[in-house]
Image (cartoon, rainbow, N blue to C red):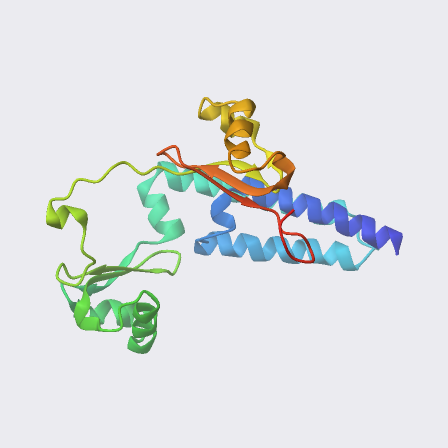
Length: 230
């Protein structure tokens, strides 16, 4: 039993490391060849995990070979447009200028019910509101609405807006992020002083704290298991 646990942990660590090396796209929006690699890695890891008679290297070596092949294909597709089209495919326009592209739907074997379902998921229940719909190489549908149906933008009303960046996380579950503090040229003492203004005297009491680009500090205290604040 102990041997099975150790082999499982080793294979788990190996698969996690390989998926990290192959890149974030492996976890999120998979291309067809990336999906194949992910499925094969899962199968290769499962075999030596279940059968202790199979050497551990018999599972790890093929996984590493697949990783090298996937990284090589990704590099080739990044450098060559022709190779990218062959390996990843091309996006397909299924709605153009407000009309269904029948030939493309037929070629993709993509029926109208599936298309309407994806449009509803994107909050476009009416096909008449859609100017373009593009089926991406990862299977997701991108929708460009008609100009009359898109959400109103500040530009439409000639309104100037202020810059909005990404808030910087300063505290997570009581742990101070020193790196982010240095990134915004602030110190631990500054943050302590700001939190003291709200009666918070210890970083460990803060569940989350962030600073937006306007300099506004947001924080939330931890909650006790039985209710109330820490």
